Image 1 (cartoon, rainbow, N blue to C red):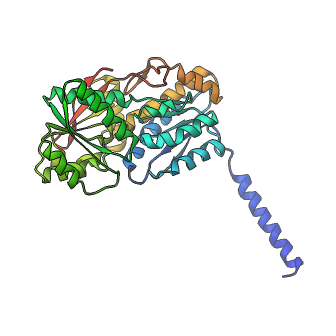
Image 2: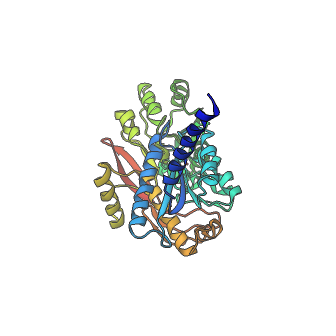
Length: 377
Ligand code: PHE
């Protein structure tokens, strides 16, 4: 091609390019980043959290936003994959210039994100990561949920209340969450005079648990503590029933997913788990929240919906108190959060950036998560 034929061609391309970039509207609103597992192994965790965050976003923006501006939520899916969280969190900070981060549910992924947020000076609020180490990363890392030393204690005390003297523990060694919860359950169960008759482990993604269950059965426990995610818990419990193990399993918040029942069926009936929230609560604010969610999604909200909702609302409240969207000022305001009225309880952040909140025990009955009791911190 001669230069005479090429020149108009380039002009046209340049013109098109300009039209495209000029037509791209300038985005308005305060940029907030959310990193969640919308797809992949623990998709229900991320989907629920996102719905709670979106509910809060709509509410905040319909009431005029924060400091006269709407919040602009930028959500990135980490596909439940290790390594992906760091990539999306870096993007949110350096490309999208978010002033704060909401995430994650799984403690392992919060632990992946936390050092990046901390180094960048961007406050991060985990809605649901309960592992103790998450907020220890630094003074920019917060959470709106209780921590596992408390949750494990609640489960151990509950097991003792059921009359159990012997407990076995089956831990997912691939997850900080499971390791931490197993440790605190064991310490408290022993402290309360119980005996641990067997400790077995597996790795997230495993499908065959027969060897571990055979060993556990031999110890003849009264209960089995299973600090698993919903991805393995129902499989494990089904295989246990097939092996003739009839005692109740007790788990933590990681069981909270519709899949516990859809996969576990009759095998999980009668089992118990600790959680942040019960959709059966009679507290007026919770009733209203549950009704609003039901209308929209035609199902009951799980704990992550409520925690996601609380996380974004707490952040908006802190920005208002800070009177600024400067991350350092927002960080200070989050740290001084006191008596924030969350759906999952009143939130006051302590010097370790953790709240002191009650837990609930739920029991699987007729395929539903039935409220058993609340446990004060
Ligand atoms: N607490 C779990 C973790 O830290 C995540 C979780 C929270 C799961 C709430 C379900 C409900 O990994």
